[in-house]
Image 1 (cartoon, rainbow, N blue to C red):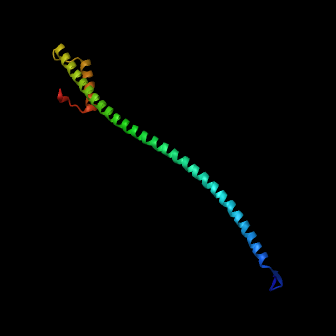
Image 2: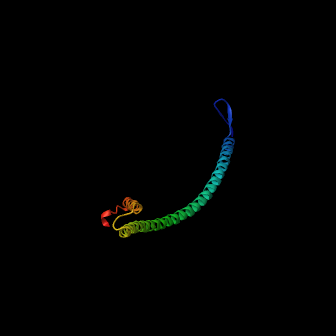
Image 3: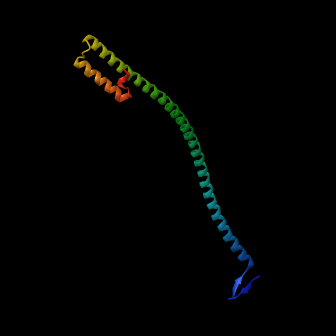
Length: 140
């Protein structure tokens, strides 16, 4: 059945339907290809995400281990530093006591008169001691 539509063009409903179906078929094929590309991209992205997730988990574990080790090292360093400060204080005190003993020995040897070398070494030791720990000469 053919009908004339303005301008005298033949119009066959079956031919129109076939043309619309062919257009729809082409559009579907294009959409199918685009979907396949998108699906492949999604699969690749999902795989890359899984890899990144595993790497992040490993990195996170390493970071946690490193943080724990750093905390331990920090505590050990604090203990070592305190021990060093105590040892340095004891050394300076012992140095001062030695200088005082040397002073007394020299005084006893020379009849209360100090030789110049002993006196200068005593003043160097005591000034060093004062500079380091604030230990006063009146503690002698």
